[in-house]
Image (cartoon, rainbow, N blue to C red; front, side):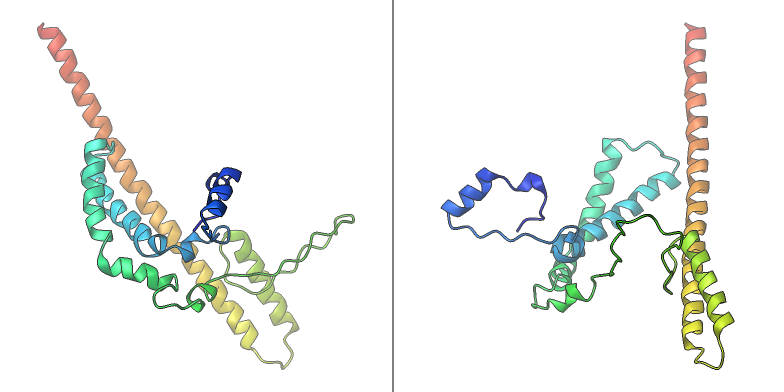
Length: 214
């Protein structure tokens, strides 16, 4: 099974497969996070577990990760993530065991796009369709959408407006959470860097004292 990367396919490889009656299957581009069991069940959990182990070092003011810290963290993360349940969950999430194509199809985010016009650019921007905003610009577009719907509202059902408000609130909440996490991370890194700077100054003072004594 291939992931359509050019480094995995060549004329020699295809000739070898043909001569040996090997049937290759290529996954759609950028779909391994939905179709490959290890990506679904293990690698994500491994990344999170490794991140937690590194956080332990950072909280201990160890900001420079050497090979020793890396192997200690990776070993603990490997045993935490590479479990039987995660392995089975990967095959189940990819719709392989039990066989369930809908497990992947239902997660696809297919959006129809208007073809790019070949004529001169239009002065009117693409219309905004109500959805959960993912960044500040989309949040403004969603807000303008709600204002326009309210202005045009004349006895029709308020459900579309209420739905749009919920989407705006959900997007705003997600952005606020991201800002809070980034702020906390910056504070943690600042403290770690301060501790590292103090440690370097202390080492420098020791070297100066040794030279003076010698």
